[in-house]
Length: 342
Ligand code: SF4
Image (cartoon, rainbow, N blue to C red):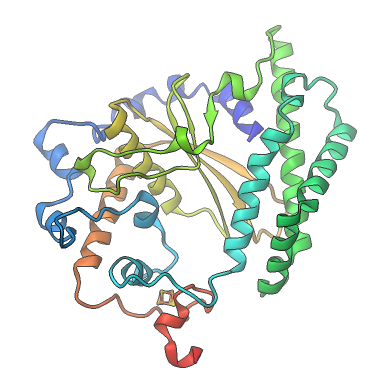
């Protein structure tokens, strides 16, 4: 996460990407022109088909709309239309690893809060020691130890051994601390006072600050929650922590959904997004990276298309077809292949 501070300093985003920001027309709060309104609104037939017996709208969250675990979206249908929550196989390596990675990366900020105020002397040796100490403390926690055991049990390939994930996360801790040191050095070179990340950029992770209540125009659920938001100064920025085999386009579409939702509630522009991505199966030295981008009309349109597609799937009488070569760890494997799982 400390890398955000350094990158922010280097990029000066609002100035650098001003033209791209000015060309955004699809704002969550837009009330004109009519074609923009039409594009933002969930169509009347899809809205009507999503009312329950009592006439309440059953909205989908941004996360539910953009989740691509099942390529055919059969999982969405089974959960939202048939009420199946999934069962056997629910504890997958990816889910356990994703949970641990998120906790580890967020924990870095908290653990080094004091250091972030006075990072002088953050040399190579000190970074090695601090990263090792943090990792040790993290993995010694009872609940994390239990998760490591689950990782061991669900690992299918050599890249999924717990030791490897522990090693990769430790590289991330080292990288983040290095970035904190670089950020500090930049400030000294400019003869400026060093202001640590959380003071300079108000990153918020707490549930209350990040919870969004979208306007009804977007046809979403009552609340939707990104992993973090940078609030107000220098700009409102939507952030999500993602893990997986590779960086995917839909990670960007998820952020576009959050931006539209935030704009519809607060009537404030959200121009930039950040995906803090941790590649789990990399064969090279890896650490979490932050992708910073403009949430342009292309991404916004993509999200709105995905929203419409999700509601359309739920209108059908039958679920989408089965996927070839399904991952047997999919939480709906028992629902989709009851004979094999008997
Ligand atoms: S088991 Fe296969 S078809 Fe069924 S939800 Fe999972 S990925 Fe989709």
